[in-house]
Structure formats: structure tokens, C-alpha cells
Image 1 (cartoon, rainbow, N blue to C red):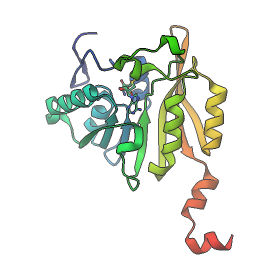
Image 2 (cartoon, rainbow, N blue to C red; image 1 turned 90 degrees about the vertical axis):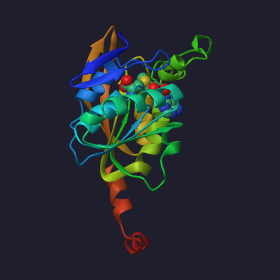
Image 3 (cartoon, helix red, strand yellow; image 1 turned 180 degrees about the vertical axis):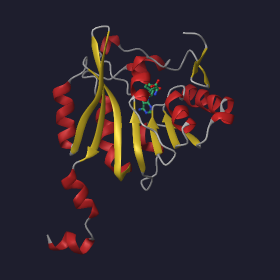
Image 4 (cartoon, rainbow, N blue to C red; image 1 turned 135 degrees about the horizontal axis):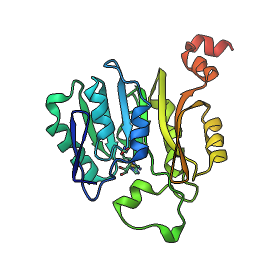
Length: 221
Ligand SMILES: C[S@@+](CC[C@H](N)C(=O)[O-])C[C@H]1O[C@@H](n2cnc3c(N)ncnc32)[C@H](O)[C@@H]1O
């Protein structure tokens, strides 16, 4: 890939220590319908492409990454494209939801996670590994994402994430059930013998009702 590329009017710079947007990034982006009213959290933003594309549409975005090069690059990309962004982006460095206050709520939470199933001897001490390594099942980060989702979603909010057929779908379904999340597959595309799905997940209705009940109602049921 060149060191920068164009996405519509945006000019996005790349960095050797940061994940280059690929099929998964564009698939997730194309599955979203962004409006200026949206308040979005993007975890693992990489070069910031998805966050910038959302702010280009006017959304308010918080994005995070554990990789300091990614955070720095995203800040540079925001600066370079600031004249095109109708919404505001805040960038934070840290592990998944750790940089998000307990009280912060979003109507969309997005994650293109590291999802490749790996064995111990395949792992390397590099930022590329951090961006791609999903642990033995491919779902190490996805599991944590699903666990933290409910806490940070507005009542009508939804989470969107990429799932690869190289990882374990039965285990994913187990995690969704455990977290009481309903799911829909929005898009599936085949790349080099691997299917990539975009999942949309929402807290199950029964759970939302529980959360919406007043303390009095909750006591009487
Ligand atoms: C597959 S890349 C996706 C990058 C970008 N969102 C995209 O779609 O092009 C995964 C990203 O998640 C970040 N990441 C990995 N583990 C993380 C963690 N525990 N907390 C936050 N970000 C993490 C990586 O640094 C990387 O930027």
C-alpha cells in the first residue's frame, strides 16, 4: 500500500507500525449508516479511517487504540482532514474500554478486532501481531468487546464488529448468549477462502426492559 491513500475526500496517511486498512475495515465501514446525530465509540481505530469517515458524516466520535503509533497517526490524520470533518473526534490511548468512563454511552460501538486464531509459536512481539492476533480461538478481543458493550450502549444503541470464519462461530454464539445480546449478520464477503461477516448486536429485549424498570417496579417483580 502507498504511504497515504484517498477515501472519498479524506486523505489518510499510513505508518509501518499501524494496521493498513484492508477488506475488513472497508466492509465494516460500508455496513454503517452514519447520521450527524450519532455518538460513536470506535475501539482499535488503527490509522483512524473509520472514525474519520464517521466524523466526515457529522457524527461525534471517541476512538481508542492500545498502539501509541496508531493514536499519534490518527491525531495526524484528524489534523490533516480537519477542514472536512463536520463532527468532533476524541482520540484516547488504552486497552479497549479502559479509557471510557463508566458513565459514557454511545449509540454505535464499532470494532474491527484482531481476529486471527494463532498458536503460541506464531505470535511475535510486534504491533502487527497486536493488530491481528485473536489468541487461540481468534475471539480473545471479541469476547472482551462483547462483555463491555452493554455498559456503554445507549438503550437504542448497537455494536458492530467483524467476525472471520477462520475463528470459532460456535464459541462466538456462546459469548453472545452469555452477554444476552441479539445478533444479526448484516453483510458477508468471501476473501481468499475466508468469510468476513459484519455482526450487529443489541442487548436482548428482556434485558433492556429490566434496565428500563424503575427501582420500585424492579422491587415488585
Ligand atoms: C484489525 S486492526 C483494525 C484497525 C482499524 N480499525 C481498521 O479497521 O483498519 C485492530 C486494531 O485494534 C488495536 N488493538 C488491538 N488490541 C487492542 C486493545 N486491547 N485495545 C485497544 N485497541 C487494540 C490494534 O492496535 C489495531 O489498531
